Image (cartoon, rainbow, N blue to C red; front, top):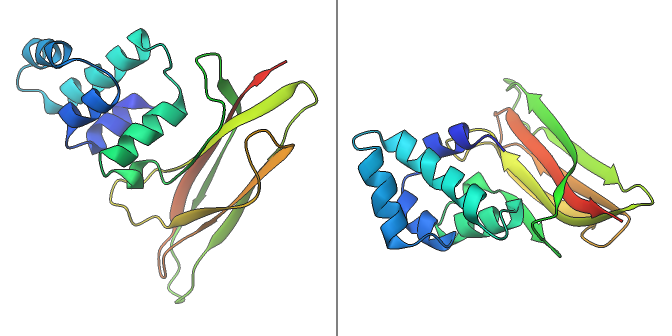
Length: 171
């Protein structure tokens, strides 16, 4: 995930940092070291979490974003057996422009695991920063299963820009 883009969309970085397990002292140091640069403070908070956390997984980040009332930044997450060993098994982006016809656009993301893989988590990330990209819903599969299928739907008269991440590990 691009922490630079995510940092630009955050507001309550301190609460998010606490949700990610960073201490008040660490957050104070980050703020002091980057005085006056709000986006850099947020970015450094995310980087510090990724470097020092025992579990810097997308599932942990998405859960913290939801706790920070920023579920729009982690539109859809299913948490399975997330661990620090998890990595991206698959990623796909769907970007469609808006149309003047009053309808919704739909796209189905899907991934079928390879025999030596275990799916542990899925994230569908809304790349737009104004919470207008649409919604995502799991329609089949999930962590621990052979596949995952997620349908994203735009709002009426809007395009969409989503990125689909499948996390897991290899056996």
